[in-house]
Image (cartoon, rainbow, N blue to C red; front, side, top):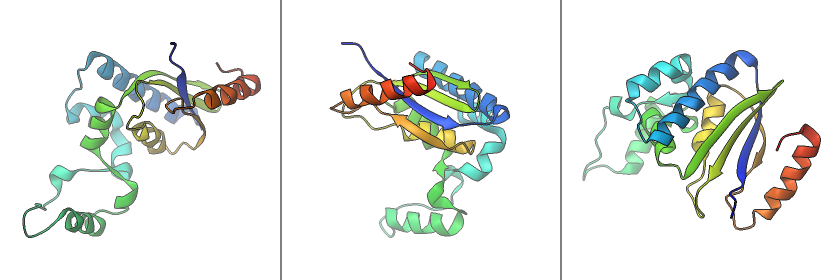
Length: 170
């Protein structure tokens, strides 16, 4: 059985897209070789996208023990980190790519439309929130997702035909 590609379409600007594309292909290479570099390497790649999109649990002065709980940690983070609920812990973000049951295929553009393609390797699977968040880090807006990782991927085929006719994408 041939695997079907899942696709995320999003609006782009060229300057930021090149940065996103570079990170995508570094993640793809790391995932394929199962050789993820340390956080310092990834921090350098993300550069100015760090402050507004991520926090770092290892820098938080809070310890879960018998006197407090996970909910206490959540409350603490909400108080200490601006816009906490809309950010991701950086180390967990990179780990999500490492652990995701997806194969990254490509990150390309056509005029002002970006496209990330990937294969979903199993069902059920943990999702691809890390890909959506990667796109969000660059302030791009997702306008279409074709998710073939469901029981009825024929619905994805119908949608794929419509998009192919409209945009010429496979």
